[in-house]
Length: 354
Image (cartoon, rainbow, N blue to C red; front, top):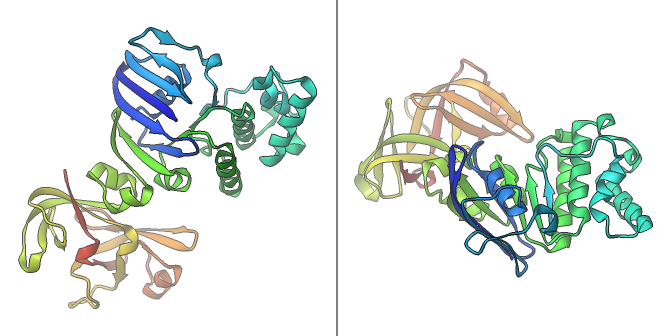
């Protein structure tokens, strides 16, 4: 198990967080820029010493500020992937991967490095130096180096951020396979909830140095604890004021105009959240079709294809985004400037405090 505990000021940020990751588990640490994600990773790696903290991995104490213990980074058995790669410019790709294996015989060092580069699709670039590699290739060399030591823990700072879409999928699958095979605890930093859901057995959401919610990606998406978490998961977030309505429903008067109902119970200022795929679009009509209780009139401002679905942004008193099929876009002739009616069920709306 990897235990990371840190509190106290770090620059303008104040950390107050505790992470525990079991062997073989990947925790995705998600949140916006400046939330403290990389700072926590650096505390675990020994690159940042918090005012108060404790780091323990596989029964070994790496940091205990109360006891005055602080192992240097080179003695912490972790594989760290830096966001900026931190490759040695004068070494070839395979020598960069082999660098952490200084206690391994030279022939075995080279064999292991070349095998890892082949796994990440870089066998043909093994003799190239970092300046001769693309950004995505450098990222994959750094990934290979992080796993070369067969570490007790993995610390990965946005491991796929530099990869283009054509290589991100393959590299992501390979990384997931490597982490699974290693059986070591892993912390993966990302600002993307989709990436957190892809890699994380659990997701911890960090905001201003504090973990505000933890759980599986499905649990966070279905039951966000705050408007902040809901927004991070990709939900539409609408601010309003709730009051008890009829039929056991809650009515929400939306800021700026409009009204909706929810099956959740709440009163006072709330954030109403609904996932884009729960929202259907149709042409404006005096009487909306279907069983949905919520209807918001708007105008299309953007139509963005995302693989086998299309994200449609609507200008309403508060912005709404729906995800529909390409066929729906064609049938409804959706394009910027076209009016549309967004509809969704009361049971699709979650209400959280704001």
